[in-house]
Image 1 (cartoon, one colour):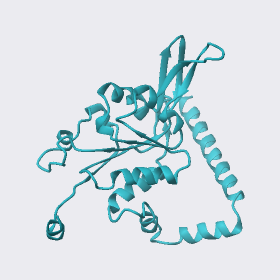
Image 2 (spheres, one colour; image 1 turned 60 degrees about the vertical axis):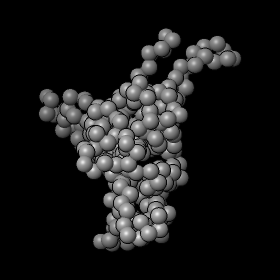
Image 3 (cartoon, one colour; image 1 turned 90 degrees about the horizontal axis):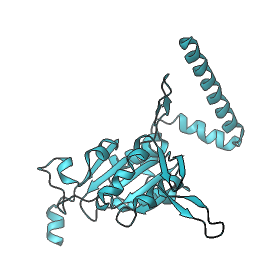
Image 4 (tube, one colour; image 1 turned 180 degrees about the vertical axis):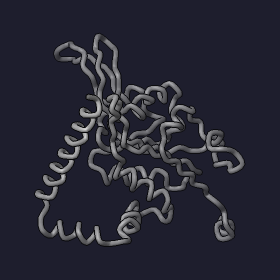
Length: 247
């Protein structure tokens, strides 16, 4: 019985996917279909897409590849037991100051219409997740969405991630892995969706990244938060002879 239920679920999911693909293809013009077909036959399409990411930033091809994978996202899965596995990719960029970390975040916010940009230093746990406020007109309590809720099905860019208070970092544990936000306050009990990828930028704990130490020793982020990031990129401002002469 369980095997038959799993088979029926797979068939239904495949039918939904085919219906969704057909709906997208029907909404496209012949010229758009021709462009998609030419991109499909191009062997260098991935490199072209990577070169189109953050044109104002020179180099950093690996970071641009990671951002491109985050924008496409992974495949959301659900186990036979009903456990939901997230398909969104969380990315963290750690590096020296003035290495264009914030430029990647701002480009992502400009590229995606529903992306939300926030600063970890100025945002509280309620501002990132959700808060319960009292309506001045009716006097009833209502839920006010935070940055993670507003970025549902999109990307939430958090700058100065290392400067967040430890209590505020604890508040986003559930949102980063389970992609939900649970609220139990003022008589309101709710579980809200936060199906978003998190793109974070952090500075090293000692001002500059120390290559002699591990990543865990260079950033002031707790171990549970570190485990919830799928990709880490380290940007080091190395000095060469030309830079040393200019300096």
